[in-house]
Length: 441
Ligand code: 4AD
Ligand code: MG
Image (cartoon, rainbow, N blue to C red; front, side, top):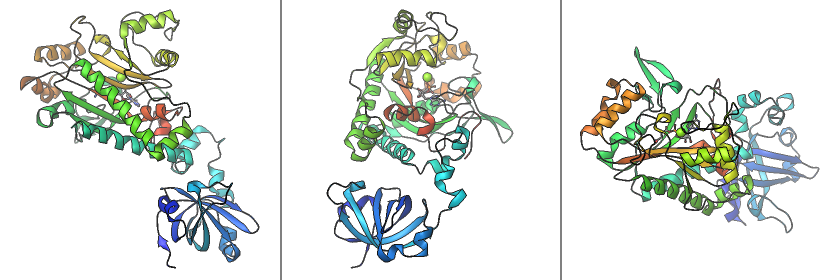
């Protein structure tokens, strides 16, 4: 009968019918009487078997991995005791090469050998993306963004798209990428927070999923110079509401992924030891964290003990989080370590209503806080940080026209994925990662 044109994901539901498929030769196992092909089209993998006249052709002899082909054939259940993706295989009755992939010296498998130098592998990101691991990570990444959007929608939090080209800084000047904007100075945004705050009076709670840029001058497992920043800003809340919201979002999004067959299968494969986080997360005051570090002999980079007021560096933070081995909400950072906009603690004004969420294997995945709602306090914040007020006039106006308590957070999407999928570095969680010195491909 007429072959039904279909994408590979729906093939398992079409047992007994004849289908027409297009895709890339993901794997190729030529044998005397059978060619086994695993076909890939971006939606799934399907095993296809070529026999008889189908393999007695020049095309069959020439066929290479990563070639694009088109074929027709019957969908059959795999025989008992055998396995194939989706439990089905195609008995091919006709096929043709659409785009023959290079072979010999230039063959795909040769270019992507696992032992190649990391910088050469980075140059080959466009090819590496075709691999099963990269494909799985990108698939869960898409599901994750979908889940966050769904949970935001359920909470009546509205999505906005703030600009990437800006003339203010949110997280301090040291990591700004500067560029020439029609003869004026401009920057790539570090965070959309200030813009989200300005949308509160019109839209209420808002969020965005937007690229942020940081001119990080170090090479670490968890720093990119461009990353996907999921940020939300919530109005008429208190600090404890902010903590509950963050924890709720994380748990609900993880639950959604575990309930999704494709994502949960990938999580099981890439991160078999994953334990879904339990609510409530541990709350750890910054001052107690400093005590923890000292009690457990986790020192600063120079070997000395931590004292109140010190930043907790990446290595120490990771050691502590790995020891505790579950998500931690590290709260109440010293004012002097944080940005100008953070609200002080009533009970200890040198500290702030701030939170970092730390997870095992990665450390900080979320940074958030309550914001200063008082105009005079904000002006003092600019002054303390040496920030020129003029470019921030629009942000300052928020405190003049109907100020209120509000707070928000930013979550690093690549870091979240690195945790969820047990990836060694955030570089594996971005389609085309950018880090110090790398903007290719
Ligand atoms: O802690 P950060 O700097 O906080 C802010 O930018 C706030 N303005 C966010 C807000 O409240 N709306 O960044 C937030 C998160 C971090 O916790 C981390 O997960 C991620 O962004 N992040 C990075 N991810 C990858 N590469 C980098 N260089 C990152 N810098 C921050
Ligand atoms: Mg931070």
